[in-house]
Length: 253
Length: 307
Image (cartoon, each protein chain N blue to C red):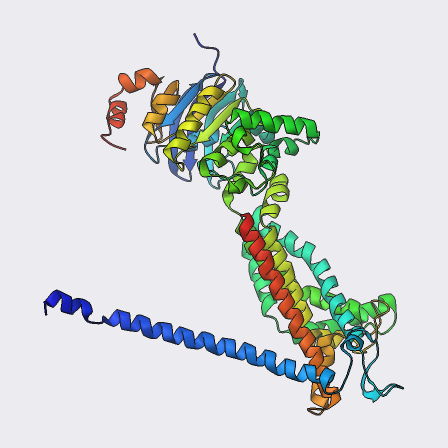
């Protein structure tokens, strides 16, 4: 039996104005696992992912109901500190865009926000994070050059290192490889598998093979609902639901 | 000949139109280039006459402090020291930019980051309106409001660098603000998202990411405002006092290159030293606006490499 779930969500609804984008999601995430969220465009999987570190808060006319907990703490409680939440739940976006600073400044950005100035601590964090993001060998000699000079795959790994430096418990990835070439993608996939012993990883992906290769659990979203959550092996070999089978065999989506 | 080949060789109407359009465009551009070259040639030929025709030393012109082109000093050299006007122009420009920059960037941050909806709806039309107000209006308000206030606060006549700075500050504020807004808006959303996702507060995101990413654009806005302040003639002339003296403090009457030019150019005879000396001032103005232009381009290029 796996450990207690780190994130739980119960009956999560989300409305953009009158449109109901999420129609009651119950979903838990276990530590040290990669969970892949899959589903066609507009199925609500990215919207759901962004709920987990409250990235949707700034969108106007949005209404969120339900209960999402991290370590049993309701993250939408009124006394929840959103800055602290985002330090625990890091996020990597689809487009590989580091800040227009040096690689070093990118990685230590979150630490500097927290007021850490000790050079030795920062240096150490840069090395550890870049190593964990599997981009240290390519960048160790050019740490003080602009991160924008790197290739797309390297940039995305710097973005991941930037998140790792803050030492979150959970890492959310929103289609992290969809803007990258296959070789860069597979490097990032491999890296995520290596990272999961220390983190809880939740990844939205459009790439079914990627979900099948890298994840432990797969959650299939369709039309704002969670159709099926299953062990990845079972999901892709013997899906429990008809819609899942249709989707993975390419009959729609 | 085979009909397909015939059809391919026949010039289409669209291709002819394209060619004609290109020709018209080329003509327009040549006209603009011609005008710019002509202006440079005209100003330079007149402005340089002071130095090779009237035998004024360039260094003296730039560093002497007495401006009185009608008289000659004991060595028979006309008194054309432009330093007071050069200093006056630079002082009002720099002070106006120094005062306007924090206000402009603050307003731009408010409009783009803090309250994009209300800020844009109210502040944007206001700044656009301010851009359109003719400079004589600014000058008139300066004359009837700013000058008396300064007179009451600091004594003297009230005319001077301080009054000029106040008027120019209001004049360049909308320009710098709207260009700063554009610069901040051009910062892509994903920088803000990524910063927030790393646990930054809104202020930290603005301060550490947005302003940094927008820096080339903001610098361009400031330099643009300075160029406008440097070249402004009428409003400044109305409040600066128009005494071609070295400004010893901010509330004594002074002059700028532009104010001396607008006052003097109608009262001098073409070809005379007095007239040529004014053209030399115009040449300095022209060269300075060229410098401002180059600085803007240089900043733009540096920013382009960075992002």
